[in-house]
Length: 488
Image (tube, rainbow, N blue to C red; front, side, top):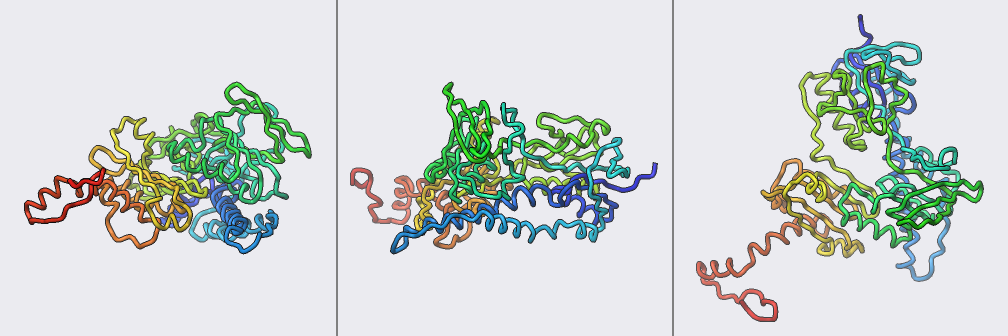
């Protein structure tokens, strides 16, 4: 049978757009199918609007805190949620043209708007038209998972799809979920003056990150008035109309109630696969609707790939982009290639940020990797003191050969500070390499040479080295005073 295209891409999010543009520009006849918004959740309901909200809320919060440096009391105006919404919309609009159907048509792809359903392993029906191709990529993303809590279904709860366009600012918000999405949004609304309660079933927030790093973020959240209810299970939800929500929770066998004007569900993600009719293609899904793939990103049907959130690996836009690059190499260039998740970085964009690349201390231990851990506090960095941010921490995870296999940073702008650590993780560089180059003063990036010096200094400045140098060069200095005030 003659096929209509060389490649069908189902889903116009980050991964799908990258595959479609790359393969089309390399000469393939590509059909790009999107059922809703080009750009996917990241542009419309995720990364972009959330970072715009965080910027707006932190700017407002900074103005609220300015009283510390004012000659007299500062009158604090209430936040205007409509102005915040308008700012978020303007940011999304400024980026949206990069993902427009017209742009991808100009790159050579056939853009088709509508829901896709598999007819067979090589055929997809869109708006009554059957498309066919030897290769297919599924990149349909994910959405907020709704837990089966009694009373939740049918109530007007919020998710990431509607939280960026609230008609009014709630007085109190209850957030279900202490992962990155829930924590970022909790802090953003808290900065706008909302009283926030976070309910997390796990013993702590941000369970993907090491406990000591997550604790830094938790301490900051609690210091600014956010109530963290960890190790807590929601047993029921009641919507009381204009009075808002009553959430019944259980902590260590003790039942209590939380009341709020709004309820935000941020308790994980679920793949957008239920409407694809995957059975017709010979595919099945795992828990959460995610499609299993191998290291080549192939599904059980080797000509069908699944990338981005839909495969359940890492729910990050940059991972979807990296997976898309692998698929372009394999599909368009026939060059092979596998996906390497060893160096995946991620950032929780709170204040301070929490950034990580490679192994955490916990993941290295879980995999049985012998490792050592270097901890360097930001109170050793002058810029951190100048900005009242000396409570941050950097952790470097080393293997037995002193090679960097993981870096975590909790500090302002940690995502930007992560680059040298990410480079070291990717190249399995020696720990000492983090000190290479001259760091401008005063910057937070001094944390890297500080960390290296804290380890190397005792190896150089010690009694043995001093004795050798005195013998060789007849040095006469007494050296540093030892504890108790005596010389060596």
